[in-house]
Image (cartoon, rainbow, N blue to C red; front, side, top):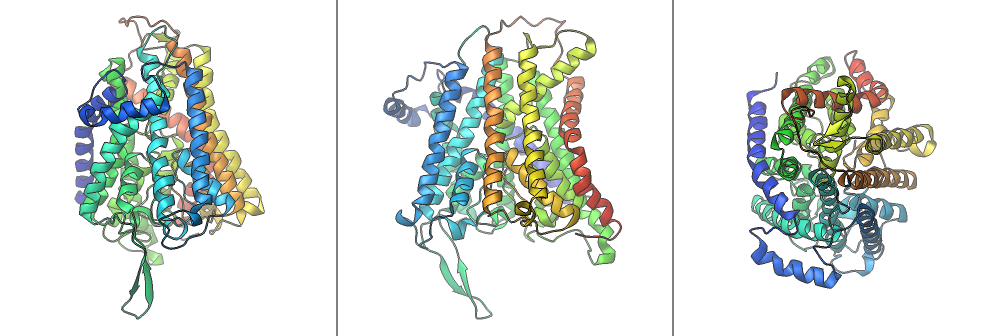
Length: 569
């Protein structure tokens, strides 16, 4: 049984998250409307105007979906080149007290792609590979703009549902500036200050050499950690300053800090669902979506905690007692570690405070399953919102088939073009994940990086490509990926997972916004209430689970039954 303390943690977390959802959702509606003011206007409006002047942008001149897409792609390409240049020139740039060399070309490519796509997959140890300048000017900057791109694209799909017979879906540059200035930057500053008060360092000092009680020398890394930690979580990025990520005491020193980090991961993904309800003027519909993903979130977290605390009891004959503490920090314990795992993998945040490779088979299955929903359980900044809406279109389509009428969603007919674009989004994730994972499992290049044998080794490789295609970035630590093969293959997975989804989503927004929106009548499909909530969850489970069921059987499910026979891998 799960302890009352664990249930209290879940209850407290959900209470605070729900309390934050409405005010932040209303604020996001103001930020994502260029003609609305916010309470931060007296401070940030002058900076916003100067930025528009420098970029020569008319903030009120909107773009078609094609123009918006071109802006997104050109900005992302520029960000990729900018990040790679900094990493290549690292030895010649300032704030490099450890005199760290430039990473290899394939690690440079992988890191740049990772941060530009909001994946933040790390095939390196930050404290021994990247200088402070690279961490700040390259990675932290991308940790702001990459989630801003996702939020902007999500806003275009919301606008297409709110408007009728239009040609434009917003201005990318306006959205980008306002999201960074008014949303991500203020939240990150406040959170960074709180983190500093909790003991997370923020300095530019070189690593300290300390002598242990055994008389050995230990290198204690430090640096501008708190600032990167804040946006790593607020932007659902996940890239840690240290290799141990949020398991490192300098990134996550206290239980209170651990709770704040989980809230930071989910606060924008939760609020953007409320923003949807405000924008389309249908809060009951947003409430049904929120209820569905909240239920799936709680169930997944409960299963993960249960497996790590109770399922490990089956290993008592192998010397495991009182739950699975391997790979976990004692200052957090099993429940807080498993809960953090579930929260991070329900979004596109790859932050971790324990080792996934050390989890029980079912414990490791939960974060894998969370990502197989393609960021639909809350999801990442922006990306979670448009993936949720993709699943809503699927639910509406199936509901139309069941009742024998043309599918409609909020007064707009869902026709062949919209369904084709929706299917592209859903199919491209599974195709990318399974094809690249198969390549890794049948080539010597891929097999050489797998540390474990049997189903656990299979799960390590599968998890890597699921994580990168879902733009999550977490990993089973047993897989060695800093090789030319894995760095290149995982880069492809991240690019396709980001832009292979983003492009049809913008095309879908462009198709919907041109439609005439009819007034809702009692004969329209009801998209709120318990029936819709249950039906929506069924659609999520159908597409998230069945697509990958054979792979899951070969990996963690087979390992689960083998464990109960006393066989470990």
